[in-house]
Length: 323
Image 1 (cartoon, one colour):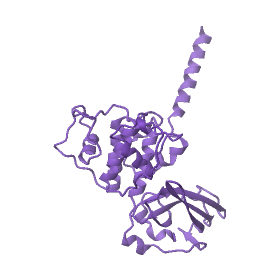
Image 2 (cartoon, helix red, strand yellow):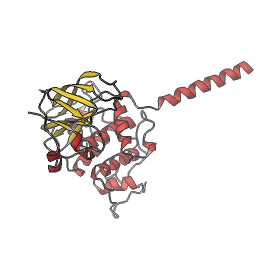
Image 3 (cartoon, one colour):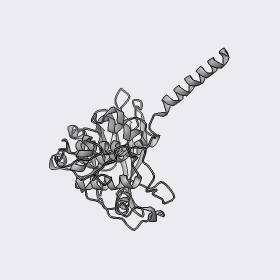
Image 4 (cartoon, one colour):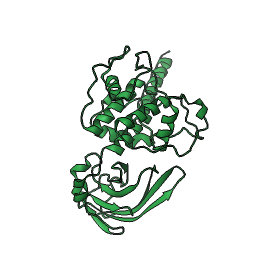
């Protein structure tokens, strides 16, 4: 009997340890999770249960906080708006800026699982709220198009055309399928990346331009040579491919640097570019690519030393114009 009890205890201990290691984001979501955490604006409870399906209430929280991060100020609640099934401040904020009108009959449905077509609709409403320019569908069609709700079809193709949401494989979208927490985090972080840094005169005047193949020293820590920037066309998107070398000229291991691509509409997208912690006097040759919408025109790429507070470090950046 003692052996059986000990065996059961051992099994419980093993299962508890295994469970404790499960609650981590998938590899493809890790960078987005860390970036969103770095803003210090999102409650800690949002960074858990990454593979679990997200509720409407949890998603509207992330979406509203994303807008507040981008705009730099809290959303004011319209006092005329209310839901009969929740008084959650983020549901009310979302309704106040037109992201959501609920599920009908005066209800929001905070505990309902969010479907993929619902998320697409909320995201398009968010694009409108942020006054973002969007690309229209280029003619692509999902094979399960006939399963889309009539109110969601246009939104699904809009988020697809603008690189915000993709299908689930085999040219299907799975509109009634649910959305995981980590997928939602990736999506809202992408929208922050597209909105948080804008081109203005102060930015342009503070940047120094460098030709390709010119050695650029950044922060007295790393030398970068941009070998090539290649634009290539795809059926529904464009691709920028960067090839560059980097040399650690400091006496310490380096933190991570990044590449940021700016577009003529003022938006930007981040590429995790530089390797973390490579040894002094070490040179690396790297190639990185970025897919972007055909509606955008790339203007230049910079090396970014602080991916969150870029505007605090403008003189330290290296800028390459894209010809």
